[in-house]
Length: 125
Image 1 (tube, rainbow, N blue to C red):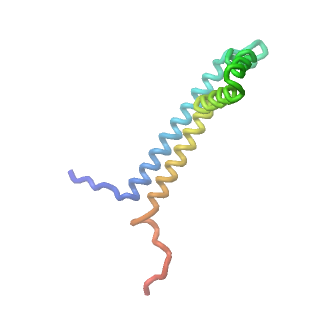
Image 2 (cartoon, rainbow, N blue to C red):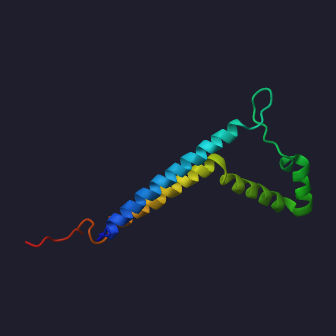
Image 3 (cartoon, rainbow, N blue to C red):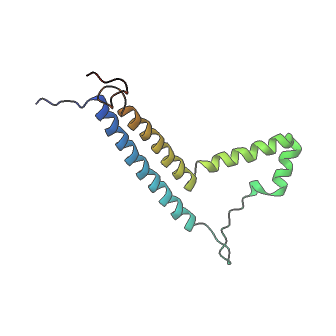
């Protein structure tokens, strides 16, 4: 059985399509899971989502400031923001963006070099 491997251009385009398909499917799955988790969140009688935790109480933030200063409070808030960035809907958008970026780079590499478009220049007569 003699299988011929595709050239570099075809491999890059195939890999780019695979990365794009898997990345967007994974992002859709994460987004759907985030919507499901959001709909199951505890709510008060008016329908507002209850997300308050003791870590964001005024007493906790005041204690952080007393023991570590304003820099400690800023670092706590930055860490909480960074942790929230990689959860739920924002994680889905990050996955989709990265898959678009990587597949775009692969498609670009697939169009370069031998087998790609000819370089502009004088044509032989």
